[in-house]
Length: 149
Image 1 (tube, rainbow, N blue to C red):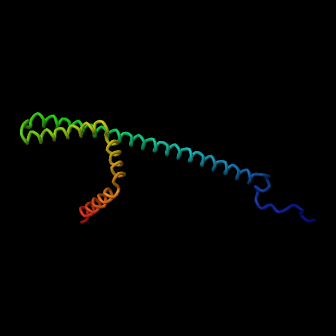
Image 2: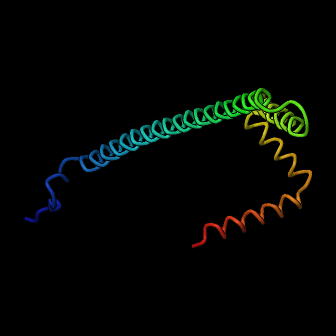
Image 3: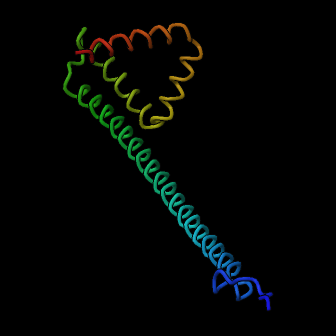
């Protein structure tokens, strides 16, 4: 009598669907893990971006406050020059001019801040591109010479 049953290689093969079910479970677990890691990465990236925005905003505000403080100091210096400098003669005229310029510069810094300075520089460069380029090259050369050992 011949044995008509196929040979059994693994005892799990006798149970229908166990290998496929195990693979499906592993695939499901891997997808859950991937989803959880992706969600955590998105949350971390969002947190880092928010912190960077907050830091940039704080730095910008501090720079604007410092610029306003410099403007206030310039105006105060102008007042001091007016009080202590002579009022007559050539020295009086020069000190009055210096005080006026310091006061107007201080007022400009308080009102316009860094954004105003940046806009003025942008407009100046747009109106005079060649001289701006030459000044940039010259400053780059001087900076390179100063930092070279």
